[in-house]
Image 1 (tube, rainbow, N blue to C red):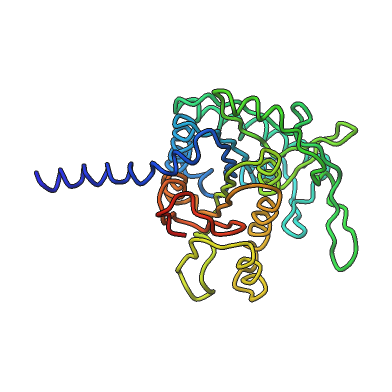
Image 2: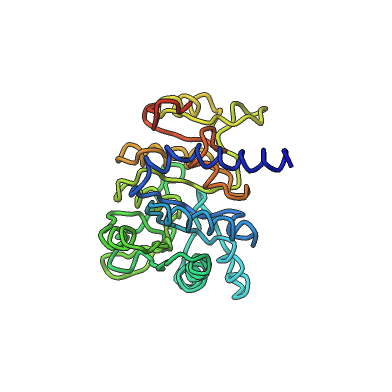
Length: 304
C-alpha cells in the first residue's frame, strides 16, 4: 500500500516540476520539427501527437513542421524514379517534385492532421503554397567552387507568417509541409529543418525543437553522455574542435541561426524516446541538448 502511495506522490512531484515551465510558456509559440523514426513507428507517432495535443491544451501554441523522406522514397520506387543527393539535398526534377508534393501535402500532412484530431486536437494542414506562406527561389548547391543545379529545390526568401499566427493563436494546431512557392507559382522542395527554423524565427517562437534519430550533442565521440545545454559560443567551439561533426553540424547551425533571429531556446532531441517533447520541455534535466544565446534560467532554481 505504501509503495502505491509513494508512486502516486512521485507523479504529483513530476506535475509540480512542470509548473514553472507551464507558467513561463503559457501563450508562447513552440515550433516542432517532426521527422525521423518518430514518423515511422506507430507507438511513437501516437506518443508525439499526444504530447503536441497536451501542449495546446495547457496554453501553448504548437506549430508542427514535418519531413517525409521515407514516404517520398517509397513513392519514387513505385514509379521507378531514382534519387540522387548532393550535399544531403535531393536532386528534384519535375517528376520527383510532383511526387514529393503529392506525398508531403496529400499524404503525410493529412495523416498527421488526422492523428492530432484523433487525440482531441484541432489541426489544420498547410504547405508553403497556401497564402504564399513560404516564398522561395531556386537553390543551387556549391560543390568544389561550382554552382550545381538541384532542380526544384528551394531557398527560402520570405515567410509570410500571418496565416500561421492566426491559426496558432486560435484553438488550432498548424501542420506545415515543407513545400515552397516561387514568384512564378512553381513549387519547390525545401529541407524541413530549414523550414522549421525559418518559421520559428518569423514567429519569434519561444522554442524550436528538432526531433531526430540521435540523442543530442555528445561530450565527445567516444562518450554516450549528452550535453544538456550549450550557449552559441560553446556550440561554435565544439564545431571547431570537431566534437560536433557530420549531420549534426547543419542542425546545430540551424538552431544558432534561429536564436540569432529571435527564437528563445532551441532543442535537439531523440524522437525515438516516448513522450520526448514532454520530457524535454517540462523537466529540469531534459533528454536532449538545449542551445541558447546565453544560459539564462526560466526560474530561480532551474539548473542549466
